[in-house]
Image (cartoon, rainbow, N blue to C red; front, side, top):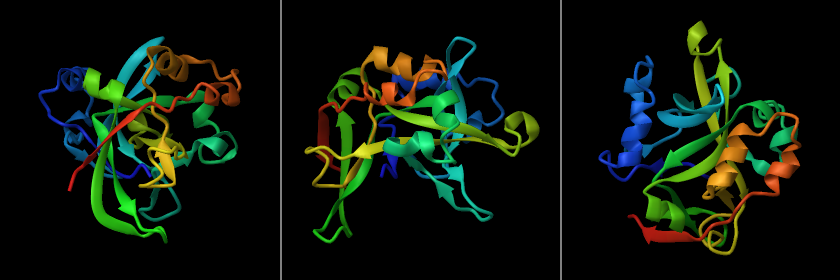
Length: 208
């Protein structure tokens, strides 16, 4: 969790602005603009020369020697997990989307076929919501013939999310928090950032 998210429509003005921010990038044409699955390419907002830039990145940090990826990072321990501890200090990002999907679970934790979409109320009003994430360069990054990848930060589910999953993504609605997450210096203790995390109201809709 979060394991799938979506953009409602490619005519969305904010989405068009994101795409425009990637003009000229060799991987921009591979960006997925409908339902986004792990390992697919998606637009990600990063700090870039003192302002916000948009990069196309793969969803999931590579893990091991095979094709496995890690798509989420538990925010409670991101700063002490070897895979993420450098990224959470130096390479934080925002993952834009319309909303994310989750499936209702049984009492034993098994996933059912009941699919729901989740959108923050502010995201619904603005046409876009943002999750906190981290990113990294792998195999030398794009400049070195490799790639960039991102992972979504998660936290313990609150009451509105708990009927569907025990975890939920870290959603950032306020502009001040988004700026802090992107631009806070590496010296700022990670726990100071965590204390600012929000739990916005979610609009839940059956999706299938």
